[in-house]
Amino acid sequence: MQAADTRKRGSRIVYRAQASWAQLFAGEFALSRAAFAPVQEGVAAVLTPTGLALGGLVIVGVLLEKLDGRRGLVGARVADATGAFEVVLSDREGAVREELDPLTPPLFVALSGRARLFRGGERGRPVVIPSRVCAVERSVRDSWVLRTAELTIGRIEALRDALLHGNGAPAVMEAIRQYHSSPAVLGELAAMVRHALDQVGNASGPRVATGRQPKETLLELLHGAGGREAIPVREVLARAQGLGLSREEAGKALMELLEEGECYAPRDGYIKPL
Image 1 (tube, helix red, strand yellow):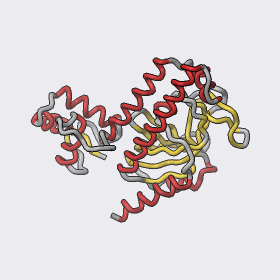
Image 2 (tube, one colour):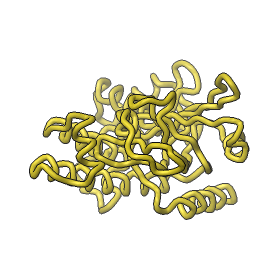
Image 3 (spheres, rainbow, N blue to C red):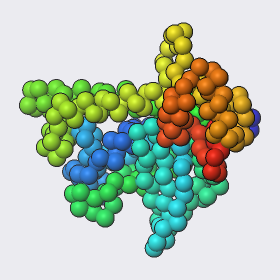
């Protein structure tokens, strides 16, 4: 219980400190290769495909791995259902390193920081330079997904209006120019949001009792069969078939759960829920 309380306090610190910062999914962030007008100390904002001029941001997802890089840089990857954020720390982020060091992947984390185009130029690689990081509960991740979906849908609607009427906010119009926005691009962004929402299910309301989806069935099976222990994949698939899923459905659901960070493979042939 003490660990859970610490995670809740830590997430409040991250959110309270950067309440006005942006939220977006990793899938959109990974596509963000253009710079916008300087927002702080001459540093350009990262312009996203939905027209968000991104300086500070708050993300919540699964800490997949921590990496030691060259020239004193430390890296990490934090994932949501749409992809992974690349996180980079230098020696100047010593306090954040101290927060990151005791965290052992895979683990739900909240992270606030600044977006940058690494290696400079208009088409640099987008990375996050963190200012705070802490472990959080699954419920914090779910709340973040729902709010990020709401914000992203709002930006997609503003982008659609700008395409339709030929005018909009400067960042939106620049995004249209830089990313060659079209109805097809809007459809891809909307599909990304739907995929992210599938991660948390119908968390905003009661579930419809029309039978569970394969992922829900498999996740419940994983938690019930082994709790927090690793169990053989062969056993998981066999039990899933006993619950009415085909082997193909169970295998596909298992891969999706792995991609979404709901479970992981501690060793070959075994699976473990997060």
